[in-house]
Length: 267
Image (cartoon, rainbow, N blue to C red; front, side):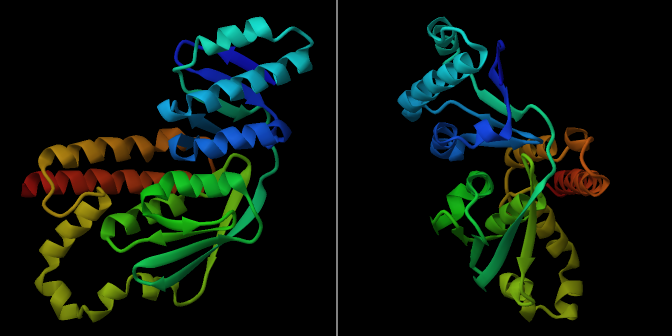
């Protein structure tokens, strides 16, 4: 383990065994709503309501670090506490062979989706919670029930499922033949003639969906969402990932540009 106190964050580089210790898991479970998952790392942001949890974690971290390197942890702990307002980045110190985690998707109907794991995995489940928190109706240590009754929720679910690598885990999604037809059953009543008649209007609706904005959103809202999403899907962020992931991000990035350009002209 190595800990670096930077100007803008606390950087912890560690192995996967330490990453899965009870005290580390407890800290991360408390902050599931304030975590950003990066390639081979997680970034934990400060939460004002969890100040004591953060202090306790830093103390356990300091003790663990001191035990490994054989020094007194009190001075180091005081130094870390001075960085109490900064984000904490936790990354793996070396690459490991990815472990496959199977996740099943089931659509009760067009409004509700069940995400379930075959075996408990707090990392994958915390990732799902961090991405879908406002749409989670209920959950256990093996599953989440998601409300996808509006287009924005469906777009958010798609975005969450596009990411297949969490730390050294590789997520494999499975679903039955009825999943897509149930989830998008609203489109079942559309005829080809209807689509042709309202082609331009429907295309604009699609662009709003791509930008995760309600139809008729203001220019400021479109611009804000566009900037946020292009940062997430910029191909340079995953340049070292597999080619198909880079291609997917590139396509998504290009679609965002197309959608924003089209809606600026329309407005």
